[in-house]
Image 1 (cartoon, helix red, strand yellow):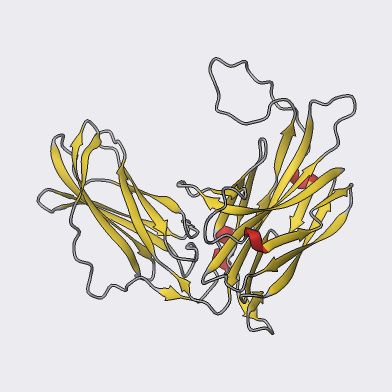
Image 2 (spheres, helix red, strand yellow):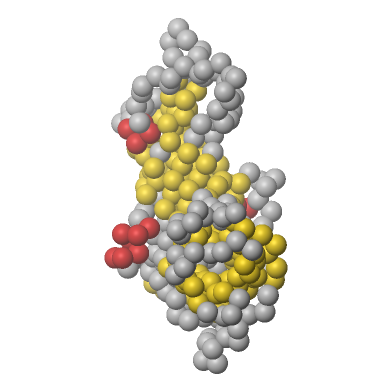
Length: 362
């Protein structure tokens, strides 16, 4: 595994402690609502339950079946359930677990994966082996597929009370690259949003980029890069900015907002028209898309945004690529349960050949 990638993304499954009691959902604070009592203190998730590894990542041929193994260790009396869910991503880059009715994308591995056993009871000191079976359909297609195994431990009701208890939820990301198929790398810019800025303040810009390929972007060599230039009506450059993509993971089928901060060389003037041009691609020079927009500055914000022509790309610029080299793992954060938040950060891995012609983790 590349050391810098390991340091950047890591291989962590941070447990969330679930507070079990009255009330059934999390909601934003309501000024008129009755204050909710503070949660009682209790054990952390890592003390109650742990799982290794936190990532299953492999390459398998269409029609093949393979098995991985997880080790679950317990420090509490818990009823444990294991579920396979889809992996989704929000505009802010956070990752979520998708229930079957929401997991409708073409790049889901959820239906390929089953865990055995799917439920068990553990006590302090127990170490349990779980088998994770991955069956790749013969018509799986090209690219890479994604899912999350959620492992939820629920304690027995506390003696003398049915009101409060502590549970824990872990997650194991599962990434399946379809062997002997290309990893198509494409994407489009779906929007440019210019935020408000006071005089002398940096100008916040968000570029909405959609991964239209069939594999993820993130770490070397598939680092996403987003750039922008701001010009006045005469074409003079006022500011430029670039977002390095080594922290901008994006799985296929989803859109992520790429934040940029621009500092104009002179204040923007109310009633004046400006031109912004943005591009998105890979650090190796691959260009996925370019878009431009004209807008009028007024009262610290952009008014009347209108699509505009872009400059011709450099003659030597590469075109969107198709590649099957490297399996670079996305970062994942899973939000699930009553008041659970699970963070999963997925490392880059290397592959070695399997006897069946695929590749395995190393």
